[in-house]
Image (cartoon, rainbow, N blue to C red; front, side, top):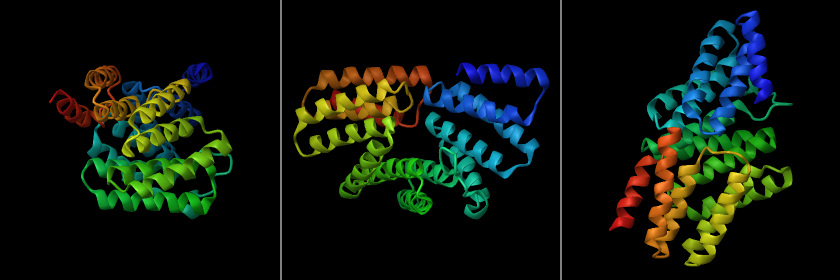
Length: 279
């Protein structure tokens, strides 16, 4: 973070150099993971403007992906879909598929994100199709982080479609890969999922303990993004255990995070679950 801030200062002293795009992109990603979404959005919008001047496809795709992911987190789903679909339209696996030294395949990123957005916009079949495309593309590339990323998002689509076996198979593959590669954030999500599976199998107390372990591991990474979503899972688990007051306390924490960060993509589910627990 300190290095990025200093790099931006140096770029601004010189003027709007092409290097400024990469600095702002890194800053936007940092603030996105910390769930400082308003700042992340402003930086991503600056990246998109700079990309228009650079006339460089990879910069355009990165800007669309970064802005689309941030808008998704903020719950601005139609705008997010527009940005992500523009990134997909620009992506050519032959031209942009060399990801040596890169964190992630850009096509996989756009496809994975838009799969989630399509589900939330009530297009479950299109969501699954895009998720499967993301996973197939990542596997063709044999790129570990891209595969873990695609598995994480596609398993979530299966889970929301109530396709539990498919979801569980993908989460287990993600866990194996995350452990091999040291992807701590994906490991924490896998622990959370295993907790939810235990709850589904009526091992509620064991499941809650596992989910709390996963939540602690998630927070230990320093990430904040996804906090309300995870807390919603935990509150639902307390509901299954007939521990209503604890569930409502967790939901109050989730609502506070939504108000603080602007991460609203799962806000409707918070209200639904609050009504269910209150009843």
